[in-house]
Length: 347
Image (cartoon, rainbow, N blue to C red):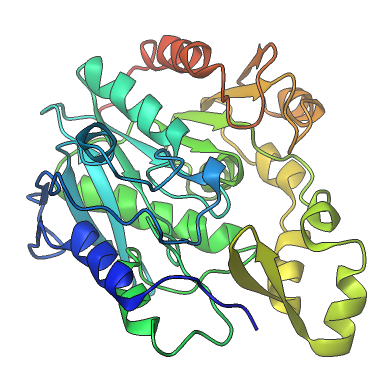
């Protein structure tokens, strides 16, 4: 049985630290503010279900005010209902611009991923508003235990941000989440001129462009071209046999556990990025950025996107891994050069 090594005192402190200073407003309001977190609280012994490379504050060891302030910048916290009546939580870097660039995180990641925060800060510095959010079933701390430890489930639920269940595939559901976000800003007379996604989020923004045809600029950071690949590396080579025998199985990923079902596998296998990209409008500009040393998704995937997307630009960041760990400045520079060329179409 999977267990979490922590005390109830630590969990209570953790919940208080993350939640005590949010000021909530109706979900259709843009007036969500994050207040600075307390400077002396610490939960260094908590073992949380977040892989180190999936959150900007790679270690949730908040001993110092520097680490706390790095995770608690002053952005507007916004809640948006998706088409399934699930609450999506995001942070708006507000500059007062009409335009809002929407950023989408990757698999088992969240809006506070290093890539999301770096790009959002650069966009904001340019005077353009940016919004980074958690897809349904994801969040700052996203727990998926089967069965959950009953003594901690309430605390974990409170720490989760976006509502809904986490699923292994879920590409089209997340594209629909993105649709709800874009419609939300449209309802406030804001314009989303560009959407950006990293890793799985790169596939989501491309799927969105292929389905809805209301976005004229897309940035795909390290997305996967062939979704039939990469499953065995994550789930084990015998994952199909395990599904046939049990109907589902649980995967331990770092210190977290999530459930894989036959339905979720089929959803991924049936998501054809080649066919989707052929449906992207010719006047939709697409930038694909990929690291030459990507250890998760090979750079060849980026070249495949370049072959089939009609209005496409490819940028390879030499030496960069999947998360651009040592190449954040090159990534941001490449992204911002493209964003600066974006012209908002007033309909």
